[in-house]
Image 1: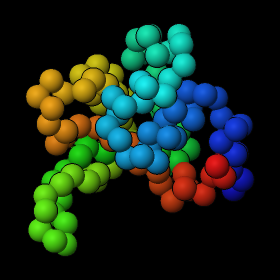
Image 2: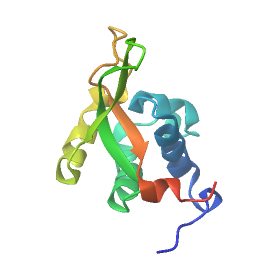
Image 3: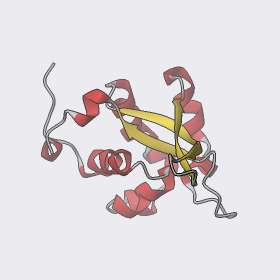
Length: 121
């Protein structure tokens, strides 16, 4: 299988790849998007992200509790959301916003798959 370099991806696709590399919550992608997508509706972003999931480059997860070896508490990506459920999860606009509570537990995050990590940067 051949993989494109990230300069062969659209700027929006690169924004999702960056977000997945950073394991940021999904809402963090807004800062990497160019206009008009930055100010646009979520419905314009879902068709850009879904092909990256379908290609097997990105997984969509929810942040889950994690305990570091030193005992400090944190968060890490949980199990990937099944591909068939991803479109419905992404259609929920709340998953694209920073939580008002400031608590990230359960927020959507993107992670690179093994194939996604092989894409030249």
